[in-house]
Length: 82
Image (cartoon, rainbow, N blue to C red; front, side):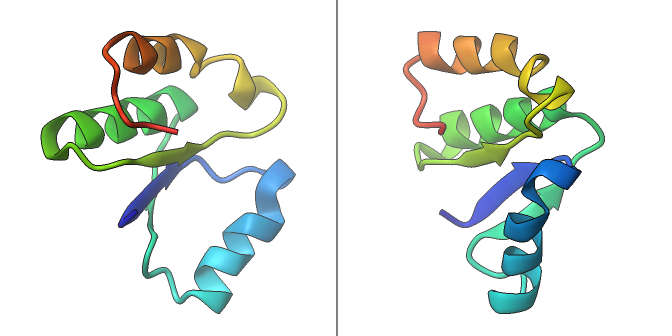
């Protein structure tokens, strides 16, 4: 998986630090987005265009509410997003 889309938040600070410090922001490369819904939409679009799996992270509080609509759209189109 070459990319992971995310909107940085405190609930996954450890994951964010590991992607930057341990992996050097390579494989997967972080694509920082302004909103969680945008992150899911970008991951969905990437997977639809390339046919490769894509990933997206969202925070545990408000961030988990807004991307649900985009996630259900990706699921309905049988897209390889996670």
